[in-house]
Structure formats: C-alpha cells, structure tokens
Length: 179
Image 1: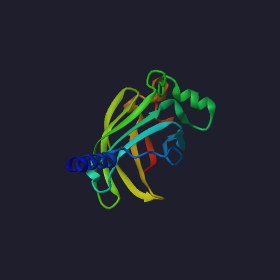
Image 2: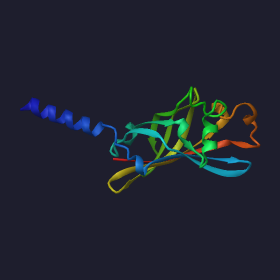
Image 3: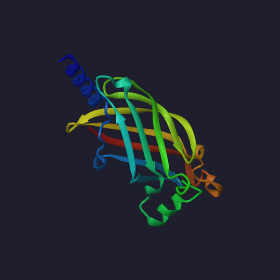
Image 4: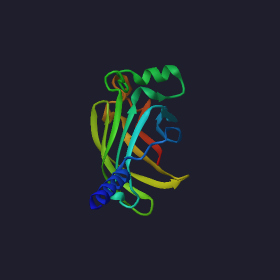
C-alpha cells in the first residue's frame, strides 16, 4: 500500500510540474517600433511558449519562447518578405528567435521580474522585464513587454543601420494564455 501511495504522489507531483498548455488563439507576440517617427505595430503569426508555472511556487517558474522570424506580419506582403531578408531577420539562416528565462521573481501580487537570455539572429543578450500573471476564464494569462535595441541583434544591416529611418528602440509585447 505504501508503494501505491508513493507512486500516486509521484504521478500527482509530475502532473503539477508539467508545463501549462498554451492557447494559441488567445495568445500573441508583437513588435512595436518607429519608422520615420511613425509608430508601427507588427505581429508574429507563429510562436511557441512553454511555461512551467505553479502559483504556489512562483519563484520556481520557467519559461521558453520560440518565435518564427519569417512570420512577422507588417500588414503588407512585400514588407513581410523584406524583413525576412538577410539585412533584417535573415530568416533563412536564423529561422527562430528565442527567450529562455533564468530567473522569475515575485514582485507583488500577480507581478514578477523576469530575467533571461534573448537570442535573435545568432546574437544572445541578457534581458529583464516586468511580467503580470492573472487568472482569466480558468487559465493563466501572462503579459509583458521587453524593450530591446534592434542593432544589438543586427536587425537592420547596411543602409538600415541608420536609426533616423527605423528607430533602434523596439518593444516586444506578449500575451500568453495557458492552463
């Protein structure tokens, strides 16, 4: 009987520790930047997020996100093709951008400070950003914004390094619904 109880406890703890299932229809990742001083919002159509989160143990949380760089939608087919080229995301050589958390620390009710490694176009840097978590319709909703400098990742090479046309500052916004 003890063996059965131990096995049941192990199965239950494995179920609790399993990653949450992401709801792609209710999740989004976008980028906001300025082109010729006009704000532009673009949405990544393909991404995956793996989140290990237990509200009772928030400091043990982990997150990994992979974004298909060729899936950036600027609202116009020609522009979408352009940003996949070598000068921008170089999607042929670097099809994925990724974020892997290294620390998620509670910062108040439903608020966290996240740090981790962001890799875009083969360049990796440390990033930190605030995250909010709230319950919605029986699922967890994770929201945040990650400020980056596009030139850190060689996004916009050659003539596109000029930040007077496309600003260096980019905000990556996300909303991931999982449960």
